Image 1 (cartoon, rainbow, N blue to C red):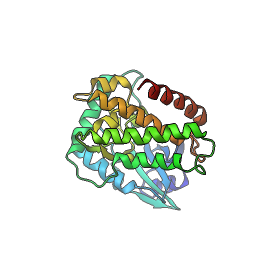
Image 2: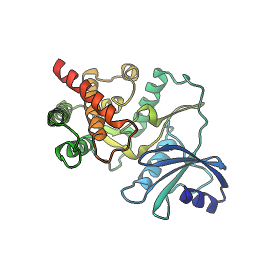
Image 3: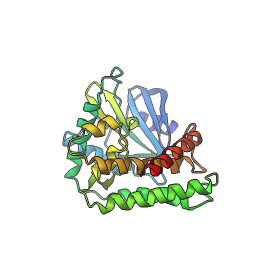
Image 4: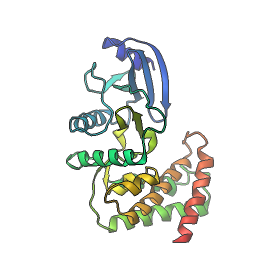
Length: 268
């Protein structure tokens, strides 16, 4: 918080009051009275410059993404071991204003803009491999029972192979366009948090969105989408069993999701 305030002040943006909006792998802050949204992360293992560059390119092509703060240079600012990016703060629209159709349309427009970009990003299977690494190493997931470990490992491996083997079209993706990464604004849905970008089928992105969105997305392969939904569920379940996971009530959710995965695999 001190790093964000210091950087904003050095740019002539008055930040006498700071509110924490979200605290996960990044700290998201609202700075007042300048009314700027700041995202703060440790310098190590961050890709803030990539996110800033991609946000600029997508916004320039009319994609529904959050804009950088126009009163500051579009870059990542380093201070005291942290990297800070500054964004426009958007007041929330009234609840229920974004419909599944709006969500699907915004995601389709985002994908259309991403389709023409050639940027180095991981493949979606690289992200799956991160979850597989957790499951394969007992010291990283010590509380995961052997039967559950086998279930997760097999699900991650088989579904990743199944989706890849279909040989469908692949493109640049958001990576995690779930509702937590969608701002409901008066300008419509806007996507945030571009650090998870990867390449793969659009159904991998749709798997993070509510089911109604996938049903309304034009041209989505529903069979691939079902496989992607179960694959994504297995991935996030693996993360909940990470010994270092700090997600609120994460272990209970991980247990519940294991049950859903087991039921889905038994139906297949």
